[in-house]
Length: 536
Image 1 (tube, rainbow, N blue to C red):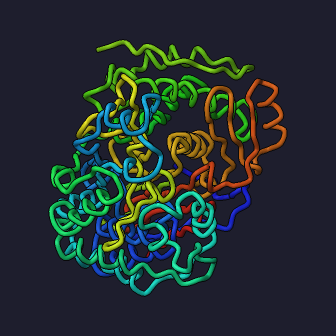
Image 2: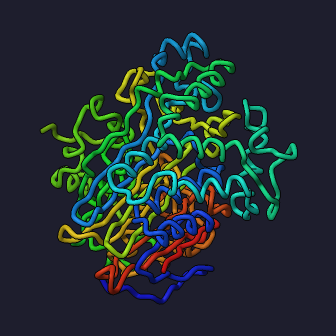
Image 3: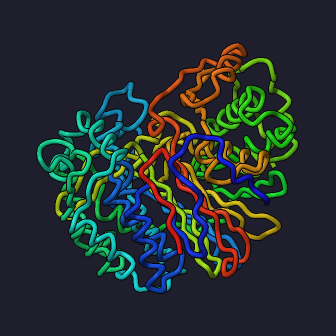
């Protein structure tokens, strides 16, 4: 692939060329991963180090109580890891309806009854045991140091920290952990997180055992129970992450790989499968025809995903049926190039998040994502070990259907790492953060790179839109005004948004330029966050 390295979009970033590289949304986390590579670790070690550092450096998005997913190329083949947690043993529709009223449709958005079993730490351990080179404790050392010594708060993280405080400030443990002066830290103020340092050190010394069967598990149970929740140490002990085979879907001579359901990665594959029926490259890259076509393809994808995707054993159709080429061709025929539509689901024939990526000169590449879901997640923070707990339980439904809550079940998940191959060989590890923006970001950036030849940093920096529901889309203020005017004329209900972080996600990209020992990689980090791509 020959990219155009002219970047037509306003940006503060340039591509990074290196043989070993880490790209994250916080510079200290990228440096943590790079430090591990310098010490002889591989890309998996670097990704774990960066992920651990991110729980401290960007707590507005993730924490030690997160879920995680990964796709990695080990030098020979792809592997997928689903480290998303499940519902506590007490969670049934009747449990929530008795507690919150017969009209409740989902578990609560915040608080102890939004907390599902966290899977991220178990994911770190699984990755380290199977693919890591360095001792697990060594890999967590940079994050422990950052938590103990503290760091100066960067601009974007601070904005989201302050914005979350009014809603979450009174939640159990939140103020103690995240409001050190009775308020959110200001830009440039030193934030220390000694409780998280204690938690990370305990996790490191026990190789995660303390989290799922020891003192951390007991501390979580005590704190959650004290505040009215039912997550127990037994729930934690029963949890195991799952190695999975990534789903594959071809596009323009490449193959996009996503983690299979319970995640929404299949939405990007559906949308690209629909777009493959059109000559996208023949349309101006930032013009209304190209953008309209992508929006309509994404709508069709979400219509099916929201109806069918859940934990696999609960799904009415298989992912393979949803990705069937004939079925996607029939969906593509529904698109009217002159009119925005509100699509319903089809009928397949039966037969708050951080993303980071790392690659090393031996060819290992890791696509990794972890999240507390909505910003600081549940807003509940266990104080002894600094465990900021996710609110992924809010993703369950209390109504009959594939995503109805039940004990031990995993909810519909938004966080999705991605990987691109060509002829069975690795091309790019990448991801875009931001709830339902994630598959939309995957699709938009892949189209820019494969259809239009834009380099990874330009694809990152290009203006984005975000589909919400019905005919409603958000658009970044940088989008071409003439394009927005024409989209409106076609029936799209366009709202221009000036907070890029909140609505349009942020990506990290590592593209393999050739032999890693010779040419190395081209890396990008999204300018919508405080991030950094760093390498040597």
